[in-house]
Length: 78
Image 1 (cartoon, rainbow, N blue to C red):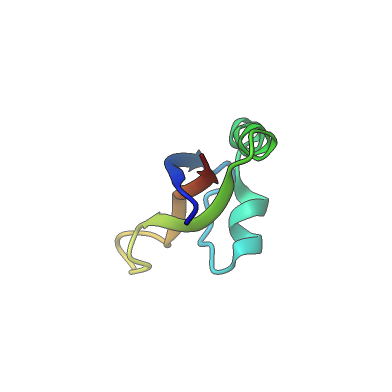
Image 2: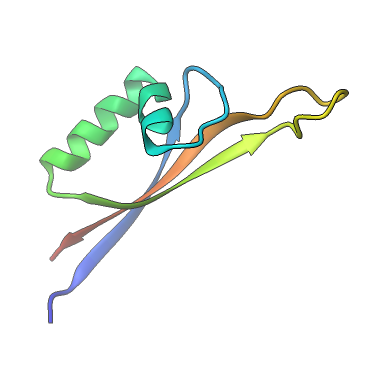
């Protein structure tokens, strides 16, 4: 049975809009986070999950919902 190592990375969002889809998340990440993703991919890491963290409630007083960052989880075989 293969063994894996795991890593979690916080990806910064440049355009803080509410992300509903994977495309929304990936199109909104910062240049720095994009470079981190490229490096992880080149080193053999595979993204297995991504959780967007949002702020705001969408209510009248608190302002609109927006995605602030994404916590991405990676694995690679050891």
